[in-house]
Image (cartoon, rainbow, N blue to C red; front, side, top):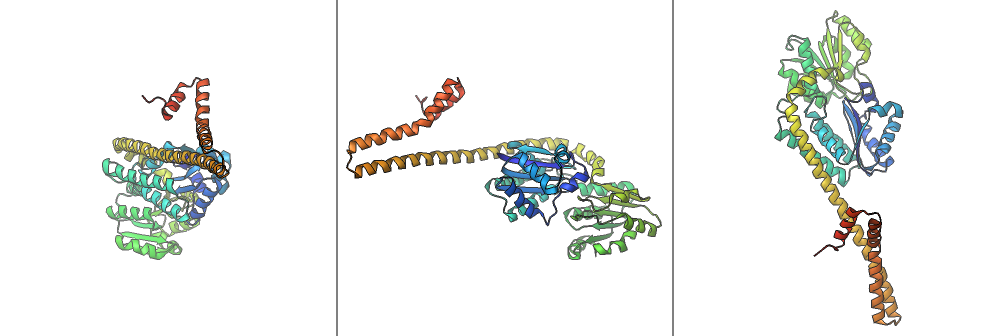
Length: 416
């Protein structure tokens, strides 16, 4: 058993399956505790975003982690397995470093994923499912992501799913300055959308959120209006563009609500971009005339254009992630060597203490001291050389010259 990373993402699974495998913020603490307890893993971190759900465990078996994921979400093995990828050891380390650096994102090099990984790590610490190894892994990963940002040009023209959503709007509307926009949600992604919209001249923005206080805090920066989710039907008919990204487990906009809004708009077109997983906007909305619905998967063409300009920087970043993953595994091996040395010393001291106690008892009973010392020396020597002698014999009989040479070096037999 070792470090394990298993998951699905935008490359391997549809939005439908990603919705089924996603973890809502209010359940993720319990989910991480359950994962740690039910997979014989003493450490577990779950990263769940719009485009991926990944489980990182220490001292776990990949098949146990996959089985837990199936059971937790009530999915069949046949439904999940074709879409699952898994990495172990150094490859698991490298994968996490690539993810946090934006090298595995829908938009190559997008910076939001690093913040999402940091949030997932913080939640795991709150849940008590992080110890020495995963703590060191994630801290190292954050350093690698920073190194990638500072030493390559991958973030020189910051792009993201939010940027892609606004780019899509620019393709549909000749000028964004005259459009009215309804944003649903007030998280980091929507805040980035609002910033891109503002930069493109949009002045009429409304932000709908479950808690209006959170929306108001964001609206101050962009001169937007804050409303609650229950007020959406009132404001929806005025919106030319709707962009939604919340953590709601159920759709916020249904076909009926949008259909009613379109009638009030006298069928003026409405662009709806749903960048949430699970979806915020019912898929049936796309069937309506004058409603143009796009999901995160529909942004792929814009993403591909951005990827071309970042290829060289990504290659440099890949080298950094590879090198740093090897360094992390060197640290893991150093821990293993420390544990082995400790175990060997403990076992040897146990033998010594046992035999010394016997010798002292014999001396207390009046046995000849010279004879007791000789017997102690012989027995201690025999006990300590027993395991090495067996290993040398087995290597010699099997003709395993490599192991035989390593044993001779370890035992000091080849010193000149």
